[in-house]
Image 1 (cartoon, rainbow, N blue to C red):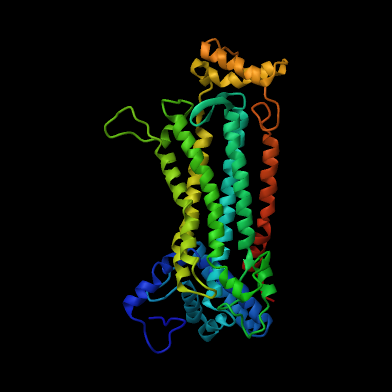
Image 2: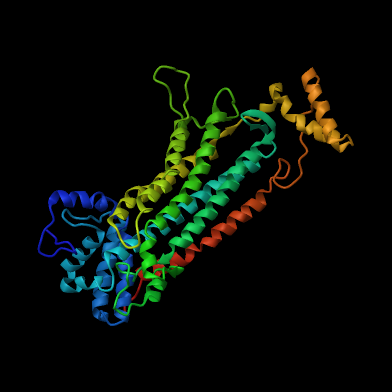
Length: 449
């Protein structure tokens, strides 16, 4: 059985080990390739300051690349008795290279290793989320343009209020995603800072070149203060979780709207048949299960920041094992949100719109404000116009041609979708994912001199 990195002469009680390791092996599989990449950057730096020879570096990088590809292909395993991904990688190197494999830990701790792993994992996941959000955004903008002239009732207090349109409805959620992605970009910027070299939270007496590992891994900059680097664990996850929750909030509201509008009482939209299920007793039922589950999953994601906060918020500075538990709720959240985004994008692309909702005169009163405004434009004081229309409604004499004439930015007649699309493009460009991708590619393809 492999000895633990911290183990000396006394072996830990097996029940204690089971309790303390928890789900770490399971969660660490998500971090494996990132752990390897971090080690590649670290040992490249160690060679530059004389703690490894060029020959040792070449041997280590060759083996680490093999392990990286194993992890990328899903073939990496953490063996029974091995505590975590860091221990497994070091064990594999030592088996292949002997004592050379034991040198990769110089100048770092498992504390800054896991900080680094989580940041590399998180920024990669953020890119995938951002890509999916952008795809959904494009679908919503396209549907907004397609149905820009199809009117529908707008509601306040769940009472019919004023004319809206499907152009506005689809476009509103598109613009909401722009703000969500701006929030995600801020979280990415805070995530994309290098903690490597902070060791256990107090630095190292080795002359580490932290700027070098920052550059090798494509970080924007580093977490400079080594104590703050450790304090950032939990904070980074919480900030990212808030950004994920913002996206989830938009998706949940959209799912609720769609379920409501799909019901027979509304009949505004029709969800794809393959996204509905039947009843075991009622043969007519087509239940919007996909969007109901999406709504529930997104509501659960909106609780994630509070869960993280409650684990980490009463800890003083320094490392504590409590932080391990955050991985169990944080790491799976990305796939859950990606699944919801995938389902929502599909449904929004295939959804069918009722183009004749307002043919029914039960919605006639939503044009009351249009009539008040028409009278005001013709010179009648607004309050007098309001009173006249109100009295006409009470007397049953109100009528309208069901036409609207909105011209200002963001209204039914001027959706401003081009401007919203430009905002989204600006946010996407602001991430600068290319820097991260170029650095990782260069590190993985590093040639030996």
